[in-house]
Image (cartoon, rainbow, N blue to C red; front, side, top):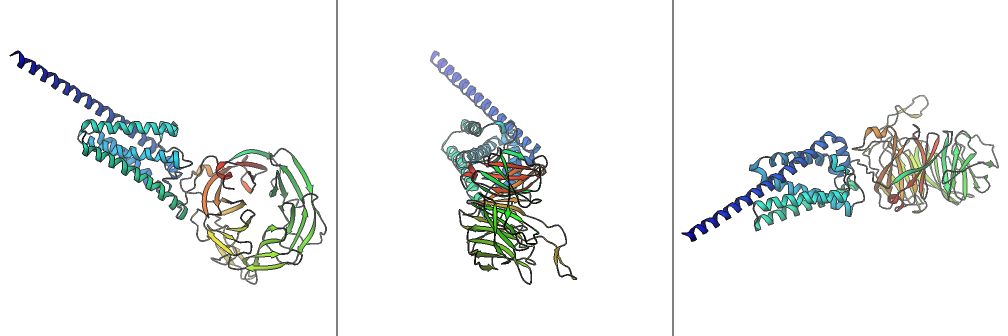
Length: 509
């Protein structure tokens, strides 16, 4: 009798222990589900309240940029659905599995950001946005293991372990696949999404010129040279730190020309005084600012770059149509002029639709022509042989212009303000800098009210790299810029600004 009583007592204790364990398991399950409900509801509501910003942050992601529209909505919907299912005991197991999958994706995303990407703003919303990336990773891992442990407490066997392993592996592969495909889509089929990573370019100095008629003529070592449209032969020399200023007056050996559009170009050690309407080109040394006529009445030009001391490239108009055409001139004393009508491709009349900017990269020994009114730039050799036709990231493939021909005079004019795409360009080393006038996808319209954007392209790979904003200086818009070796010099209103390159640009020049 005593033996049977001891057996019964032992069974009772085992039963009570089992009940206690089940109670603890249920409490842990309830606690885990409650934490996840709070997390997902809070995160989803935070995203909804600031949805535009959340979507914009995803648009900046190196993993999710092309899928930002879909992902921004899907993540919020999934978080809310999982939160609802976790509150229903009948669906908690499946909801926890879904939470494991979603948290595995979030965790993989952060791991890729930390180890395989170079920038990304946080796009989780709410208080989690205050966490650093490593802290965010620890937070996600803690929640991930919490959900896995809750599932295993409910039922731990080989089948459950295999399911969880496949679930986590599948989630990792999904995010990894998005990362691999995203870059390919961004480079080949960019849906006009800009990226604004940190450490690109930032204002490091400025100086008040007290004059809005200056433009950047060029740079040389630690000096910037500004020319004045109202005083064409006046040069303002400023040191690269924007501390000291010095004025120069150019002396011409001859002035018997009917000047209409005098400009100055610096290509150290020379400076050039040009007027394509005469046409005439002077050249002199920046050491004494005295210029002699180098070429006159050889060809008219509307844009020109000096490749070296014996060669230049220019844009002119082809008679009798007036279509734009590029040419080169070798040997200034006895110039040999060559044209290539195949470089510029007309879409309409060949005048306005082929208008653009001409630049030269001394590093690559290439000429770069960027259209004003469509998303294309052309890279040619110094002899004007076309090597590449690449696209800027906007989607304007065809110029949007209203062109009319005046019957009485035969002149071709614009009937309405043009839809300009790429306004200013400058080249330094391997990079093309483009001041675009079009707002990209996910970009805040308020920023565009007081800032201009500069897009940066890798000329060697013909790919888009990144963008950065140039903020107005006392309400003065960026109107001209020039890329130096270590900084960009920008004219904004009556100020000249110095934007120092960050490591992301410096490493590419």
